[in-house]
Length: 451
Image 1: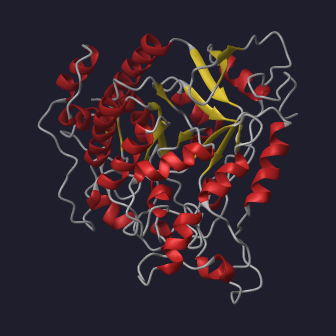
Image 2: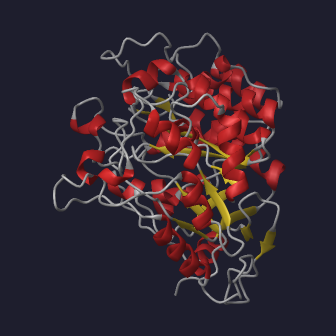
Image 3: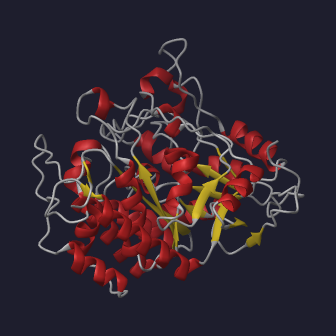
């Protein structure tokens, strides 16, 4: 008898009256054969592979290995033996946010930031001038990507035109307060983008949820938002805030956020003005395997339409310090078996996206390396600062040197490659020729980014 794991898989979520269930009439064997033949997988196929069959409880470990082996072979056929990474900095502008997502411990209630608020708290807001200094200093280390994902500060507006509209509005549902009411003025989104877009850096910012915030109360669409941000210096868009693209799940974990259709509309708009994007999934909370596959299906359909998604990033839910855990919605996050299957099935299902990322911030070094044999081919970036996962209880650090990357990647027999954000530039690194860089950045000279 095949060994199985008593994981979360196939365990009913009785506390949630979900319409979509993690069951399928498709057999595991037929789904595996479809994947082996290179057929475009159906949702039923995906559920069968992700659960290793719903005919038995838990994850069948022998079947799991079949899925992992097939995904690793598909990875090798698609992108070869290279493992890529970037030299990047995270500069999150503010933790102030009123959205109330139950999976997040990054945000701080924006009332804490008001002038009449408490004298001290753990949150932060960086004015544009500080964001500029942070990026300018980081450029000297050799980075060439700045990733910026922030809370939805009520004082944020897209630009001066948007600020004027919000100030004049009598609507009480726009989550807006004048910046004069806060101890630190975050500026406008356009001002922050201009501040960070210095020295030839690639600016990866403005999630669909931030774009939603940047058009509230206005009669313009997402194309206007992303067009103005592109003109200010935005280069690409992180496809985060996706969580699970099924509204019955979103209604539980982030009822204050944009719905699935709005997220997809924002992504289409970003692509329409010439911005490349990534796409993500955050899994391992209240959703089931059918929800995960429905999410993959919507990402695949979107990529068929826009062709702008450069990589897919599975993000395992970090539960320890989040309201979902503290309020009893969940007992834990995904198991290691679920993590491996999520990477593998993403590789098999997303036949139109070349790159699948393994996040060492989420999985750790050992787990992250294992994901590189489950279908992933990208190993994230140097980060230099990582506040979101850390504030949720993540344990795996905030920075990574090129030397560490080279050591880990060569240890598993793969080739380390420095890449640009959009994968258009690549530099194969010789593990016998230190120091290893970075070299692609506008001020990089090949010396170590971190000692």
